[in-house]
Length: 226
Ligand code: TMP
Ligand code: MG
Image (cartoon, rainbow, N blue to C red; front, side):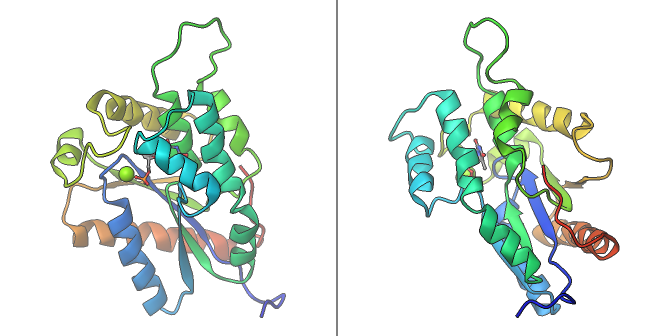
């Protein structure tokens, strides 16, 4: 039961390109947190288990088509429908690992080819970010950095809509832009070389998690907003 003395959980986002190893690392991390006595849970985005998530899944697997703006807003809505549960889980003292979050949301849409329209550009970073304003803000964003060559070698690459070389290169540049943009407080991003072995990467990820937990301990207990 929640008491005023229960410290809140940390909100930790894991981000990166497709096939960077996010899901593998999230699974390992969840086990490590729980075996260290830190209650933790995993929330993956897109969450394909909801009605909105089902629509997103059929778009990603190319069984349906949607215009770029509509699918963008659905990805955001898919986060909003989990907002209350994210906040109550954090308040109850459980740490949440996010397997992708708003940062993937921004860069994957902004990476799409622009239609020849007049400004304001409907797929600008600013436009892409707007629907997520107000969502809970992570205490740390752990970014798994992988080269395009390594990503392409990994099993399953190319299965889904966005897993194309040109798209991934744009996504990489936009992630760099976002990390350097100052749209986040200094130090929000924890960048890791994800080209090593699973164990090596896990050690680096763990350091990022400890930093996230430290920030929560030193904070005022409130969950910030995007
Ligand atoms: P997944 O492979 O982690 O399930 O993600 C599916 C794809 O969806 C991946 O290519 C990234 C993309 N994506 C968006 O375009 N917008 C979003 O908001 C999110 C969370 C993912
Ligand atoms: Mg994928």
